[in-house]
Length: 149
Image (cartoon, rainbow, N blue to C red; front, side, top):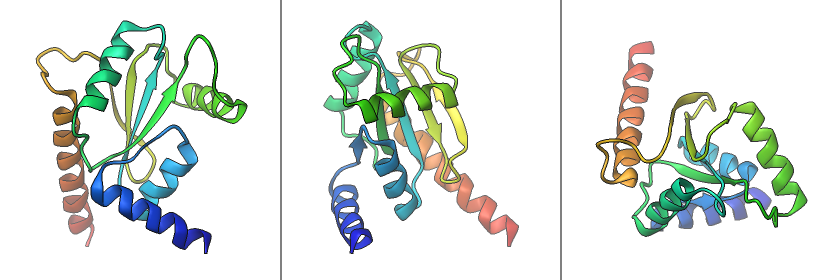
């Protein structure tokens, strides 16, 4: 029953709009259920001007549906639940994050594809850039799977 509920919620969210969550486990479960890569967005939302700019652009744009977005935030005020704080510090260590913002793109196998800073020189729309990366990743993934056969 739990899987069916999660699947229905994920299906409705992914069909209408891309998913943005602050819960890594939830994002990972939905990404695995739909064979989608993840975009892990590491920010300091209340102290970094570049993070504020990235979040403003992300929330104002139509996010690409090729990714499941997980917002991993490090606000100075630390007003997050203890579970989220622990999760975020674990992910920061796992992905060796030293600068904010950093966007880590993770494939369907949960291995890192690449990482991006913000702003990116020559990129006028970060969301559009992510959409292009998602298309290319999924196309290459299909080609590799076909080549394996």
